[in-house]
Image (cartoon, rainbow, N blue to C red; front, side, top):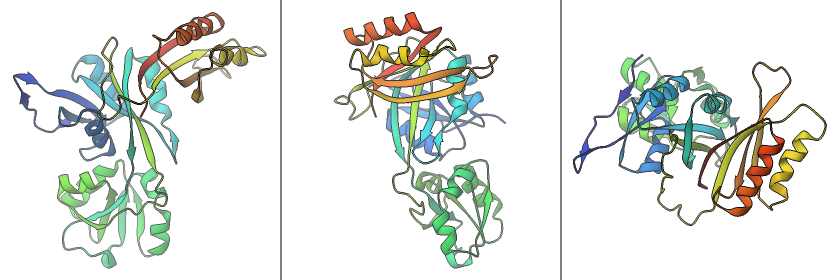
Length: 293
């Protein structure tokens, strides 16, 4: 499957940024790109997350927008694992409000819908809608926006899809019902990744937000090792806002620890904390420092 993009344009004689994402045009990742860069970027769609990372490594694109965690579904573990494999830097983060809409070809009414296609996570986040419409069958599909693309192209009988308003606009579908998600506090956190050494992105409205730093480390498998590692932050009054463990491949029952704290490496207390953590960790890598979303 080849990558897809919107037509590339020129701005003041310079090529626009090409930003890779997983899925089809109209995905929530494309909304994230808009929040990151406004109209200054062309979204380039790839079928898998590993293909997105590979495209950035090969220089096919300038950056990548990756979902890292959802407030309801939790972390996208594949992307945390991929972060470790590639020498990219997090230059920005944003939170996308996930609004699920029921989308169908023009002419199909809600009362006539019998099948709804979408990504399994999206379907699971709209259970109240399906409970209220028991005649409608849920059909898992590989992508939210892709389900709209398929429904509009193939026109399966009495079928609709669940996806973003952007997907409805791109594929010229009709929104039969807006905001059918169960929980309005449904947000997905995205990272903007760029090659190592890239400058930190200035995201509209983010200049007054606190700095955040993301890193990953391992410790020796011994009593108190994690406590000593985290004390490097606590002793400098750094606010730890996320920590998550992932299996350390090749070493069963040992783990990598991904964490975020408020602050940036240029600050003295952060500099001292990182030096302290490096002394007690077996492995340490700073993934990026950026304005908090």
